[in-house]
Image 1: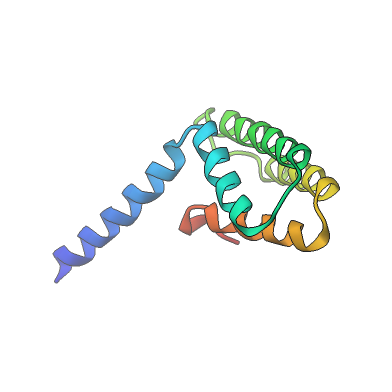
Image 2: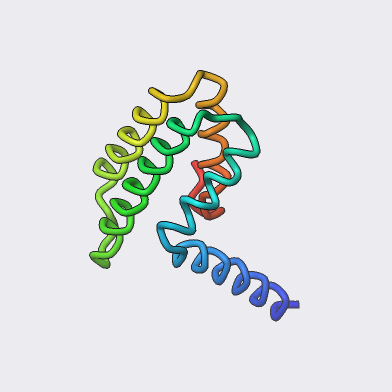
Length: 112
């Protein structure tokens, strides 16, 4: 029985690690695909959000690449910057759909 529990834990850890190892392009593509399934966007809005997500994920990766735990306030700042930029190009309901897509894309252990 303990073996099954350990195996399950290993599968969860491996899944989270695969999520973390995705490239910026893969994460942006995945989020944009899901977002486009939920809302209809003008091409200008889609381009703006895609660029915003690319910058966000690149910034996040550079913060994490140091090997040390990233500064929480800096992470909060880049999340706020991303959200502010996206909020400018989407309506209220569309923005809420965006937030839901982003929340669903986080590794399970990191959802808040």
